[in-house]
Length: 111
Length: 110
Image 1 (cartoon, rainbow over the protein chains, first blue to last red):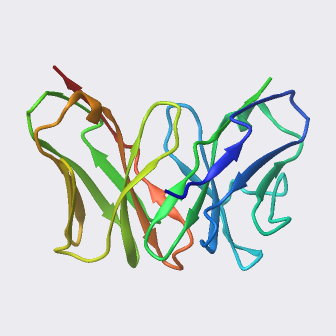
Image 2: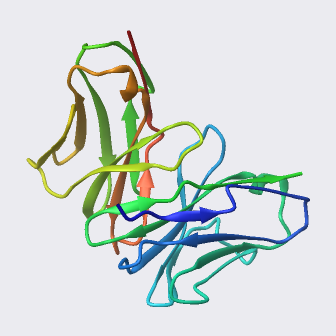
Image 3: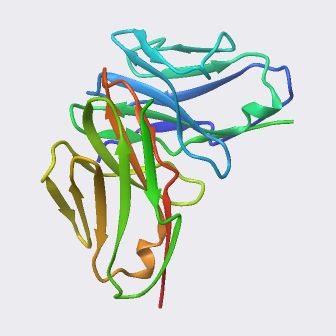
């Protein structure tokens, strides 16, 4: 069964550093997403990506964040100048016409 | 603003004791309602997508139903392995994002 994969599974970084979270969506899907989940809170939408451009973004997704699809398979989320409050699980997702699948997540810890 | 409310927040069942989880929503233009299962420290696992009032879908011990204002996830004769948090989410508007509820944490005991 096809699945969304994410690396790394856990990333620890110091405040102010930049991190890149990586995802490989399901190969025949066209819509890609990043969500995050702060411990004990609900899953929150960050950004959607279609046809090599951002199609929608939330208020959370400010200039600190960027996404890229550098090749035909990878989808990345870059977080610049990380803050303590960026600590969360970050999930990548991809969608077919009717089903949206999530990856296992990257746990980001900012110290 | 789209809103999704799930109840109860937590539910404890005995093995074999059937029950239902509720997801009520207030949205502008529902394009789909999604149910997910989430285990601790893991990503949401896709269960169902429902599109229109009256629609039902089943998978093993789970059945999801949809009305114009809410969805139910019925769990029949649950087993301990059904213990997880069940998330409801709505796809609206341009269809580019899911708005999630806070989930129902289900624990099934022997």
